[in-house]
Length: 228
Image (tube, rainbow, N blue to C red; front, side, top):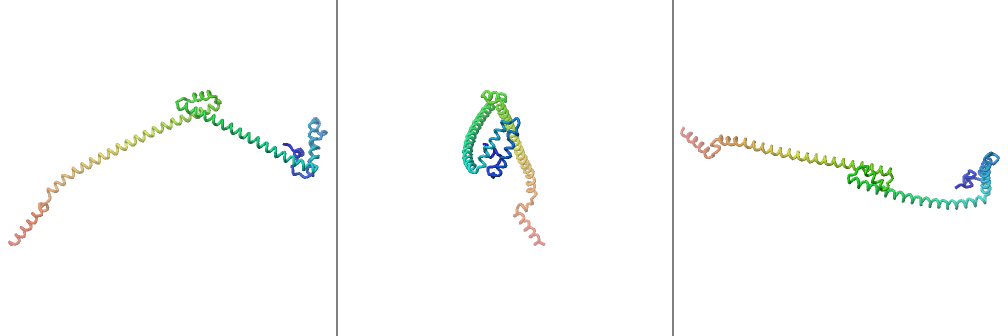
């Protein structure tokens, strides 16, 4: 929105002297005699400069203009704000609709991918739903890559599970083998210890085995001692 101040090239707080100097400079620049070949354009610009100076050089007229201009600016700003708000709402609604359409296309592609269809089929289905070609290609590529990654992850999980099961079976087998070995070792040790125990019993002195016999022997020796 061009103002009289803009026409003279001065700010709104310019002094009277600044306005006068700006008018002289602009008038010399756009005087028709100084613009040979562009007299019509210069004449119109020169007239605008004269009108602006006539108002801004008069304190009373400048005050009225400033008041009117301020009111116009407030109205213009309010109108611009309303336009911007309406534009923002339209853009938000358009984005929401676009996002909803995109989500619908992705969901459709995912459903066909889950059924085992490849990327080309996904692309064709999206085109059949009037999806823009570039977007259809992007969605088909992304969904196909996602499904491939999921399949690879599932295979890796199955392989890991099988490996864990095999490790558990091996551990159980080793545990059972160790238990069997311990049982055999215990049995062998028991069998080896039994003969030694029997022999020790056989070699045990009769006196140790029968306390009464030992006392009898001591009594016999005592009697023999008396005879001497």
